[in-house]
Length: 218
Image (tube, rainbow, N blue to C red; front, top):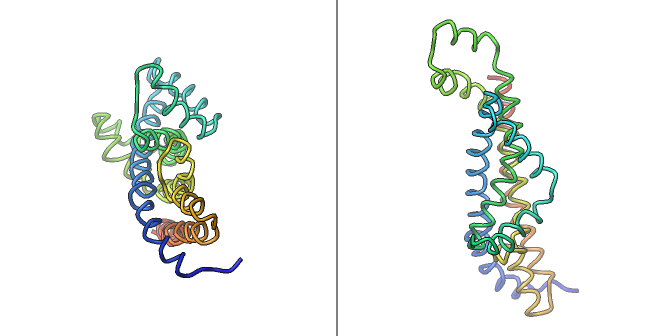
């Protein structure tokens, strides 16, 4: 099978459009949702809030113990039976965000636990309001420790966006398969899709490694 440059160049604009409109948007919004929701989960569990903390713990275990594909299927195909209908991309963002929030929670927990006990004791001695203790003392130090790990999970989420094809999102890989199906030639579009993933994720991974080294020496 020979590489057809003309076919590849014709496919590239379609693939880049799918990447920007769906794959990249789903990754960015999913990461923001996971980061925010994971932090809320971590704080609730750290404070051991009655009822909420045990419920969140059970929810996290369920989500982490079931495949992302099943969760996406439930969001898009099962919820309409209960009167909740989500647009494909919306369901994808929620599915990715909630799934990875359950992993972000443990990352945040590790960062919070790494804050020296003396910092908590000093805040208590000064009678600081819990809001100031968390947002001015604890979380800034915790975030400094967990940023590289959060970034690694964002890259992992990016590489799992092809699962959104299950719920009809025309993301990068689905677009490549559609182009290949129309011509019965999958080599160029799928190869280009892989190269686009590589071009986006590899520099990000290098930047995260540099950030991690800088934080370790700071």
